[in-house]
Image (cartoon, rainbow, N blue to C red; front, side, top):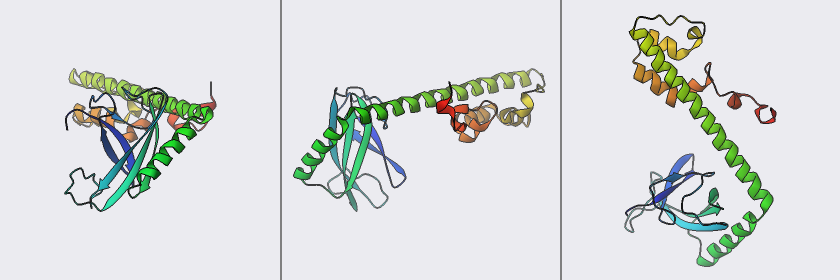
Length: 206
């Protein structure tokens, strides 16, 4: 198929990667709220017909076993993947054209668009803060592992409360501890957690 991009959508609690050559084809994966490289300005609506097999995986070949079919509509607003809609079955050309017009009209509403774009920005900022927190903790794990290697005991005030420190002192592989900090959501509830995630009033605080 060559180079392409992917749009991630959710169906029955599982992610599906929808391949497309519509944009810059840089093997990038986009989710709602992401800016798409190569997207046009203004409001754009695209569609695709999706065929799934018995395992819920996409079927691309014409002779593949197809047990479910959906018509997918994707809305791109000013370069941002803002939403998608899935409908059972393969829609007729007339129904597709009508839905494209309807979705374009809906997203010409500046209030709706502004609300979604602001929410997308807030989500990205939160993800960046969370990743920075995880990276800081990973750096701390590396520093603690070096201290242990030189015989320096991890007995500081904060060391007693860090789960990653306890894992290191019990002899766990430092690489495994770093992986836990970076990948395990439970690690976010530790001493250096992202307070915005756990504070129900976070959006109202200065």
